[in-house]
Each structure stands twice: as structure tokens, then as C-alpha cells.
Length: 294
Image 1 (cartoon, helix red, strand yellow):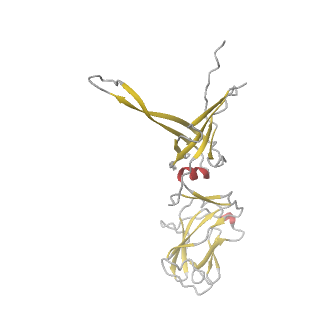
Image 2 (tube, one colour):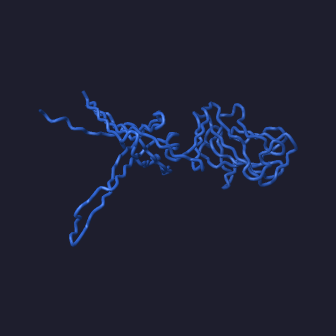
Image 3 (cartoon, rainbow, N blue to C red):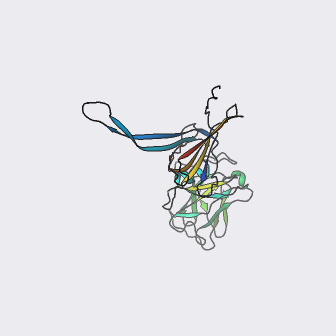
């Protein structure tokens, strides 16, 4: 009888985390640098007399760990590994402007005495520039506008910073009762409140802008109600040229934390670390499934 063909594992194809409650997948990692499942044993050694080596050794505990390098950051990654809550905005062909919200004081954003709203200007979506904007009161009836990034200043009509404070308005904008005023070159307009305008100098408000987009995820990390759900994972190696398939299923995984890199001319590749636990219902830690080609 000839020897069996060697079992060889090559590469990585996908990792799919799934709910332990109903088995439904959270999503799939396809852009991967690799993954490793490791079991590390701790031993109790017995030493005695003048002998330098142990007389006996017994296994104490085994730590099971799964590490992976992922090259994409889907929403479910933040949910599982950072305990994040996620809200989404549907795709918009005209762009999105968030609700104007006061930061300092209460007069800048005001339905009566200040700026009632910041909104998209009709037919000006080509000039929208993604970013966080700050509206600052400089007199009872005027404001300056600042932007915290110039990442899209070249979109549509060019926009530039006016000074090192990141002001984008060359001159202050006048806020008049129930009247729109455009923030130049941004595709955004501010509308005055319904009453006599009378803001307090130094008050500020903020809003966020996104140019036409395919959807926005707002990912909130660090809430006091955050949970890190136990989940399962199915890890599949690349299918070999001879047709062999190799996969490992982890039944009970807990994980928390990963870094987000901002490196010059480099893709961010989060390094994930998870603990693999014993599943008392299935009476196993993980299962290997090796399918040989016909």
C-alpha cells in the first residue's frame, strides 16, 4: 500500500466571524495578510536535590490564541473588536451635511437669534468638500467659518485656508433674519434665524460635510455600555491547485482592541488578537476540517 498524500496548508482565503446565538455571519474578511492559531502550554516542573533538570513535569494549562492581520476595516470589525456602536447614512448622490450643533454657548446655532441651519446649497454639490466645519461668531450679526481638513479643497471650486487658524472665509459672513448666505466655494449655505439676529461674540457651532458618497458609517468607540460579543470564526486556507481545502472553525472567541495605523504612504493593516475558549456545549475548542481532492 502506498503512502497517503501529504496534507499541506497553503495561504489564507477568508475569515468569517459569526454569531454564537443564531450562526449568522457578521461579514467576511477577504483582504488578509495572514492568520495564526496557537496553543501554548504551561507546565509545572519538579526539581530536587542537585539535579539541574526536572524530575517530572505535568501540564497545567493551555492558552489558545488566534491572531490575524487584516487589510480591510468593515463595520463589524469595530463592533466585535472595539465594542463599537455603528450608525449608517445611506448613499447620497448630492452629498450630506449634518445638523448644525452648538459647541460653545447657545447663540451661534439658534432658530431665532443666530444661525438656524447649515444646509446643502441647491445645485452646488460639485463644490462640496468633506470635513468638519466650525462657525464662530465675530460680531452680533457676523460669523467666520473654519475647516479642520483640506483633504478635498481641490474638489470643484478650489478652497484655501486664509490663515494658520484654518479660517476659510476671507471676510466675515453676515447673518440676516431668515436669509441664506453661502460659504464661498463649499456648496454650503447658512440660514439666519427667524428673529432679530443678536449672537454672542466667541460662541461656536459645528457641522460635518460629505461630498456625494456611497454611504457613511459613524462608528462610536468607548461608550460605557460597550460590549465585546463572544463569537465563532471560520478560517479557510487558500484552495490548493490539487483541489485540497483546509479550514479551522473556532467556536468561542473573545477579543478586544486593535491598532489603526496612519503611516506615510502605507496601508493600515490592523493586527487582531483573540482568545479562543472552550465551548462546553460542543465540548471542543476548535475543529479542523481537511477536504482532500477526489
